[in-house]
Length: 266
Ligand SMILES: Nc1ncnc2c1ncn2[C@@H]1O[C@H](COP(=O)(O)OP(=O)(O)O)[C@@H](O)[C@H]1O
Ligand SMILES: [Mg+2]
Image 1: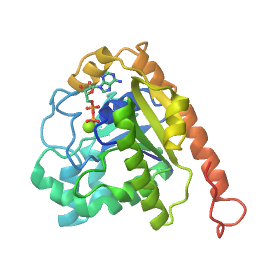
Image 2: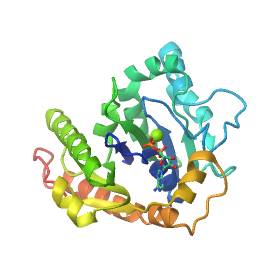
Image 3: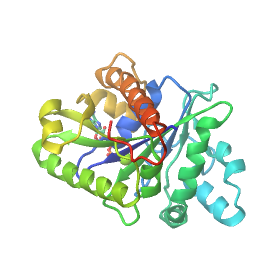
């Protein structure tokens, strides 16, 4: 632990904004890994493209396929979002479509590597932006390795049916791969139906609802000063507690009472 994977339901925007807001308010050391196969957007958006050269998961993948040097190369491919503290680091996503082909065969390798980051000195959590599942090669190994998977969806009716399809697809995949149940939750973005209604409709608990906050979302998408008091940042700030509770409960169940038992959902 701990990988926290965010994946969007088809048609629901907001997964990168949610992942970035969580990263900027996280209370532990954290790496935000942009693993959306459709490409990363934080470097060009929130960071305004201000870098001295290419950096990110694409470069990392090319190097790993060529030299098998992921462990050594990883830290130099990160951007410090809170320099010079190195407490909030970004692994930028793919920008060059040619590099996307290098990343695809390495999702399992990245998943195994991210899992190890919590054992490092210092330890890091990894928040993974998985984008949408409706792509040619979704990063399934990252979802399977995650301690918590958050399905990001708008709470409006048309989006709820695609959220249901996304949840069903993940549940099917987890069952096929014997991934213990209980790590999946909904993360609502914006207004619309209430948490109780959505949870009932989709048969899955809602971990939190991030408010519609276009001013803050604009800053997170295109750059500027993030204000901690804004509704979106306050909501993101309070997301870590239920996420950690879920991880702890799941961890306790997985080690109880024997590893032979299939754990119940939490
Ligand atoms: N909570 C929010 N309130 C208002 N606008 C939002 C919110 N979250 C995202 N947006 C806006 O929606 C658009 C898509 O957001 P983004 O996070 O990039 O979506 P995705 O990564 O799912 O494609 C952006 O213009 C962003 O500013
Ligand atoms: Mg995105």
